[in-house]
Image 1 (cartoon, rainbow, N blue to C red):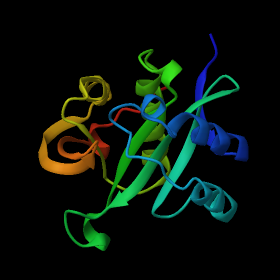
Image 2 (cartoon, helix red, strand yellow):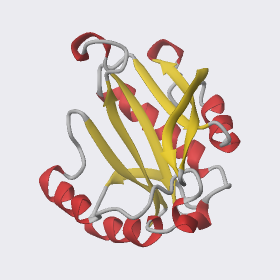
Image 3 (cartoon, helix red, strand yellow):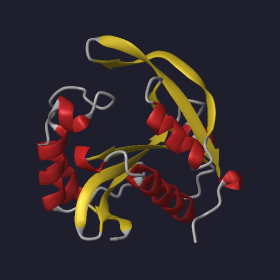
Length: 176
């Protein structure tokens, strides 16, 4: 079976992201926010290959095949940026690769990467309150559910609750 890995995004990955995430079916009910300007992805790729000091993205690969992407971005909701910044992570897998455990492994690899290369103490993730699969995934990775953020996300013509999870550096056990 091919190995799951993360790598820097390429021009071809941007094409795949555009093809796979520009529809309700491709993005999923939890990630469909309408059509968006994918030219911004190409501009960002040319600027810094999606590796910035405040955010980034990597391709999720199964062997040589790109099957989605993971993202991280700086959050400062809990106070001043210089004393309270943490990473928030997100994932998007192409529809045909969901439900096979790849999302859990990809997020494990991302958490390992972020704790190994950045001096942040906390990683958090939010997900739709009804997205039980992602909540189970985060719990498998050692994330703790902290609560519910009420009506915090506009999606599909309505406001939706988000569950918030976090993992602290001291709670993390890197994969071997």
